[in-house]
Image (cartoon, rainbow, N blue to C red; front, side):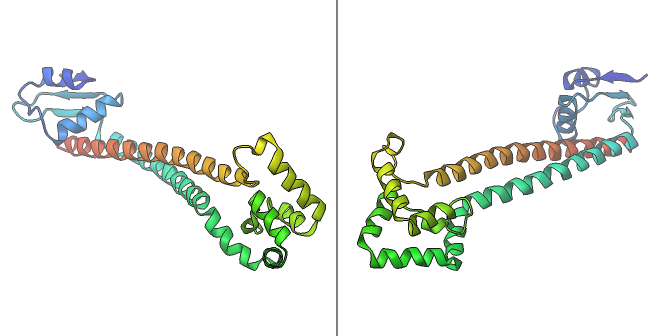
Length: 213
């Protein structure tokens, strides 16, 4: 007679003569921990006959797991790209600046105008970010507009907001740091889910082999 079993403890009590350890017992432990149940009956000395889940039921469950793993793996790839983009942001900007005439205009003024150079150093002008549309307008104003340059320099020198950090573009660093942290959190979560799926899939494949016996 079939016996419905929902835990490894119950399984061991029902079939006490079976090995206490082994790949199949590990598979059952994983299967039960995820809420699975089995039906089986004793056939005398060997592993009991598994009547539920059937080979086809397990095949369907494995396919569902693989589909889910594919989705998670796709998301994992996207988040890894986002992390890489954030971590390489400044390196990429260092290359992009070389194509920007504004950057070379800034460098020419640094070499020819000592007052301009002092102001640029005071605010730590993010001239290397001229390839980023978020920062290019500010750099352009600093390079071309004397009044704006002096006003920004004065603000950075005296404002409480810049008391601890005189870097006018510190937001760019903070933003990339935030993006890296957020991406890493998603990566860790998705990697954990993928590993759990792989572990469950391995268990189901072992039980599926049992179902064929």
